[in-house]
Image 1 (cartoon, rainbow, N blue to C red):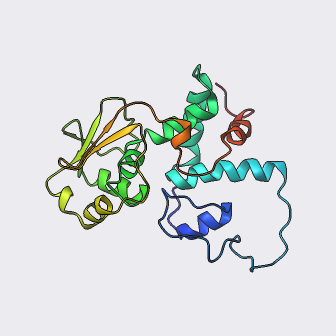
Image 2 (cartoon, one colour):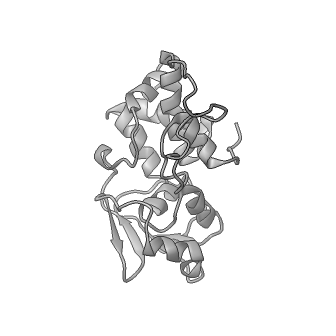
Length: 206
């Protein structure tokens, strides 16, 4: 399945959640699903619908394909840690997500573009793979050209989210470093990860 390139607000409205990694815009003005008018009767979601909705929140926020999500769900199942927490950790450790959470880009799609255009350095070396997995001790910085890009400058001045405790940002050097693996408490939006795990439990083998 290819990556969605349509309106981001439409995706957030479809799952009824504000997804900070996807867009800075808010769904408050139209919190109902696309194609539905305000006040229109809504059918109660089935159990499958609720599980699907939580899974889609992750896909939309991180901009990943179904194939990729299944791959890391399988990895989470194989780990000895809590499957749901491990899944969230692996998504947060993506390079494009880390650039966003560090306040160096306004959204994950913007961070992904910066990575692909070779503006991002990991431990001083160019890395252009958005799914590159960060580890404790890794440090992210920008090329000289990257530091001057408008969205980078504005994001550093006004980050979309407060920076989590598992990373450290150096304002003087404009670098961000991984201190430890992301924790559940610092996750940026409401998610029932147990429903995602249950959604894949029968179809993904650990």
